[in-house]
Amino acid sequence: MQERERVFGKSRKVHWSPEGKTGEEGKAEGGGIQDMLRLIREERKTGLEEVKGQERGIREEMEKNKGEMTRREEQWEEERGEMKEMMKDLGERLEEVEERRGGEMERVKERLIELEKKSAEGGGKSRYRGMRK
Image (cartoon, rainbow, N blue to C red; front, side, top):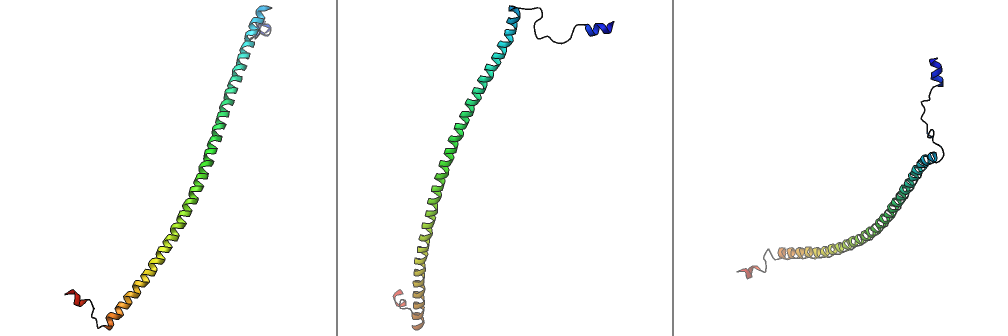
């Protein structure tokens, strides 16, 4: 008997449709669920539009940053070329100075050798000794 009551007894399942309500009452409550679903869909659509707008903004910002990076790289390459040119010019100028000094040093060495020869020939006397008195 208990088993029979259990089998044919009241179900524990949750009923989604309202019991005992028919006609306008049933439609009104069912419409409430429809309204909620519609609101959820609208919110989801609004959220998706916001995400797409943010995505567009991020993409635009990335393009802007990419352009800025490209501009800076070009500027850096230009400055690098200028620096190479300046270094080349300085190298050439240094070579010129070394050549000039090298020539001057050779003349000074030759003059020293010449003076030493004269000094050795003159018996160690300098022509300037008489003037020092």
